Image 1: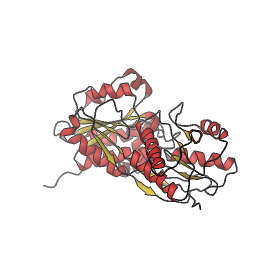
Image 2: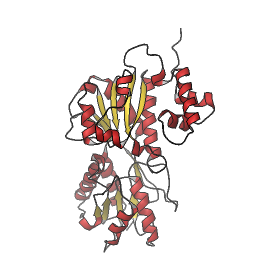
Image 3: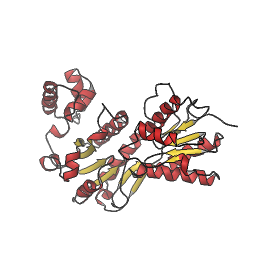
Image 4: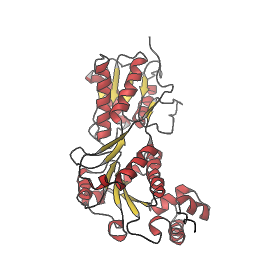
Length: 341
């Protein structure tokens, strides 16, 4: 007898003749679909035996993936497509192992209360993946459970635990070295190092490349803190207003910042990339309104998802040790960096 096919979100979408994104929103109880469609998707998921709705023929067939709601909002977050790819990449990788990835949005109230969502008690599960920047206290709450755990994309150095991230320091070093090889000698940095280890490590990579090549790091050319989850246009504009001498290039610790910077430079009548070149990180799938394609470090999302699932299912998944699996990103050269003599 052939092995029974595991049901995917695409199967539900095909059954209902709707988009996979609509199925995703309905299953996560997000805005964007009607209440009637939400009920229909849940009913179809039960009937088809999708993921956690499937009959459990063995113990702990699920993996819980906790994701902060703020990075899942497609309406007001420029990173939605990036994070969407990562989250559902985890689902695909789990299915390849015969498991279900149960995606659980984590709102601010739940984080602040350090309370565990319903699936922790309602369904059997094999382990937990914490995805993105989750509050330190909440991450510790899950860390204290006697269950395999992996932090993905972001982590805390003082919370010993298996973690999978992009190789941020090495990637930033590669991007800045590319700017230097293109002839740039005064290079600024923009990245909220106070928000996550990812931004902090990219700052370290910038510093390493600059020092190795004998380049001076001017404090006035660097913006390293943010008051919120990420920079606002007002924060970047205030920084730019304080520049007396413009760098010929900036390395930004993510592409959202890079494209925001590009727009503000255009408003100040700076030519891109002739007057100011820019390199980013992540390889977000869009260009800004001026049509600028960004030189960037492509995060290898599929490889990171595979690594997270492998680590969680291995004996190391239960370790309370600082095990760090870093996936090297890839330099993508586009027209946002000009050659200088």
